[in-house]
Amino acid sequence: MGSLSRRSVLRGSGVAAAAMAVGPLSPALALDRRRVAVLGGGMAGLAAAHELVERGFEVTVYERKALGGKARSIPVPGTARGGRRALPGEHGFRFFPGFYHHIPDTMARIPFGSNDNGVFDNLVSAGMPLFPRSGGRDDQNLFGLIPDPRHLATPDAVKRFIVNELLGGNMISPVDATYFATRLVVFLSSCDERRLGQWEQTSWWDFVRAEQRSPEYQTVAARGLTRALVAAKEEIASTRTIGNMAEAFLYSFAGVGTNGRPPDQILNGPTNEVWIDPWVDLLRSKGVRFRSATTITGLQVSGGRITGARARTASGPATIDADWFVSAMPVERVTRLLSPAVLRADPSLEGLRGLVTDWMNGIQFYLKRPATITDGHLAFLDSPWSLTGILQAGHWTNDFAATYGDGTAVDCLSVDVSDWTTPGILYGKPANRCTKAEVRAEVWAQMKASLEDTGASVLPDDVLHSFFLDPAIKWDPVSRRNSNDEPLLINTVDSWKLRPTARTALSNLFLAGDFCRTNVDLATMEGANESGRQAANAILAESGAGGAPAPIYRLHRPPEWEALKLVDQQLYRLGLKNTFDVG
Image 1 (tube, rainbow, N blue to C red):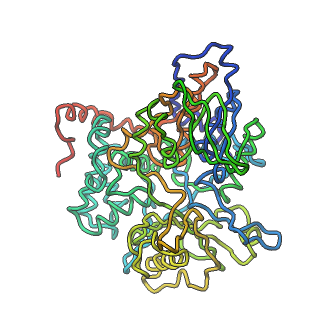
Image 2: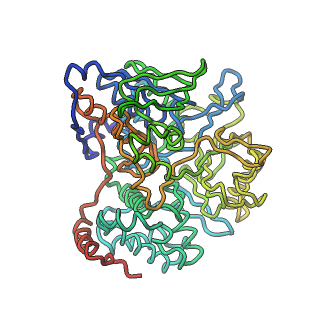
Image 3: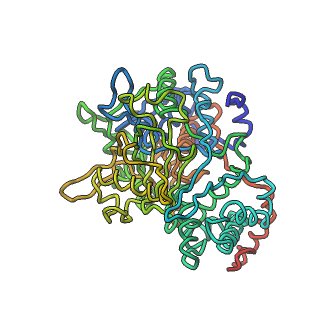
C-alpha cells in the first residue's frame, strides 16, 4: 500500500463536503467558545475529536469503558507469560471494504513507524473468502472471480454475472440464481425516490421473495449473503439498506469506487496495537484530553441549551461543563438520557426509542497448531447461529506464538455470532441462553459441521489451546440467560425517518454514532466515522470559527444506470412498478 498516498485517497474518493452556515457567532465570541465535550470514545467520538482538535477546538473525550468502542481489541486477562503480551481478544473481527473512504482517510493521518501513509498502510488484503457448507454440500469461494466493470453496466450483464459467477454452480439452482439476479436489477435500476419511498418500507426477505423460493435460495441468497456481508437481519432490514450495500459490494469487487484498494481488507495486527493506540497518542499530542471510567447519566437543559452533562466517575458524581457537547454514545445509551426536559427541547429525539439493537458479538479460539482452511473470511451459511470468522495470524506482521500468550498458541480463529436467538445443534438452546462454556462448544461444533462434513479433519479438538468470549456477554445464573452490554444497531424497515442528523434542536448538542443518518447507512465503523465528521462540521459552522469542514465522502454512484433511474423516477411518480419488477 506504500504507493497509495493520502493525497490519492482524498482525490479519488469524490469529496462532497459543505459547511452548514446557520447563524454564526460573532468572531470574538467564536474565539471564546472553543470547549467541546465528546461524550463517548468509540469510532464516532474519536473521529469527532480528531476533526475538532485539528480546527482549533479544546476537546475532552469522556469514555465509559475503553477507547475504540466495539472496534477495539481486548487483551485476555491473565494470559501474558514470559515477557509476551496477553492473547489478543476482541468484540468481534472487523474488515474494511473497498468502498470505505472516511476510515482510510483518517488512518492516513495517523503516523505509524516508518509507514509512508501511517496506519493506512497497516491494511492488508484479506485473501480468498470461503463459504463452507454442511451436509456434504460443496464449499464455495464466493466472489472468487473479480468482475470486469463492464459486467455490471447493463441489466443483462448483471444477470449473467450473478448466475454464472456469483450464485451459480452448486450454491443455488440456475433458476433461483436468475430470479435473484432479476431482483437485484430491480434495485439497481430504482430511482432514489423509490428506494426511499418503497424499498425503505420493504424488508429484504420480502423484496427477494424468499418465502416463494426454495429453502436453499432462502439460506444462500436471502439469509446467508445478508448476514455474512452486512451483519443485518434479512426479515427486518430494509431493502434500501441491503440493496445499497449490495450495490457497493458489487462495484467494490469490480474495483470501482475504491480508489485502488482491494475489496476486502483487514488490519495486520490487533486493532489497538496498529490503529487505536497510535490514534489516541496522536490526539493527545494535539491536545485532546481523555477521561476514562466516566458514565454519562444525564443532560442538564436550560434555555434550549445543554448547561452540563451529569456523569458518574471513579471518584463520584460530576458535572461536565463545555461550550459544545457531542453525544457519541451508542443509541441504547443515548435513549437513557432522553429526559422530559431534553424531549421538550427537541421532541424529534423521541424517535430514537424506535431504533432496534441486536447482538453480534465475537468469540476467539486460540490454536496450538495452524489450521488449513483459507486466508480470507469464512461464512458458515448453514450454521444456526450465522457464524462468520477469519484466521488472523497469517495476516499479522509479528510472530503470534513469540508475541502473545504462553508461546504455545500459534493462531487466533476469530468468530462472530450473529444470531443469538436460534437453537443450536448441541444443546438445542439459543446462544443467549447458553453458558460461556456452552457457547464455546456450540460454536466449535457448528464450524466443524461445515468444515468436516465430508470426513476431513480440519479442526480436531486437540488443536484448541483456549478461547475468549466477548466480555460484554454476561451470564446470569439466576435467570439462566445472558445480557449484552454492547449490542449493535440493526437497520429495520422504515427506520430512516427515526434516525437523526448531527444537529439537534438544542443549540449546543450534536449527535454522532452509527445510528445517525450517513451515506453508508449501516452500523459500521465507516458510518460512525462519517457521523463524527458531520458533528464536527456542524459545530464548526455553528460556532463561526471558520476553516474548511471535514470532508464527507459518498458511495460510488454508477453512471451507467442513471438513464434507467430517470425512467423509473417517472414510473414511480405515476404509481407504477419498476420496469424489471415483473414477478
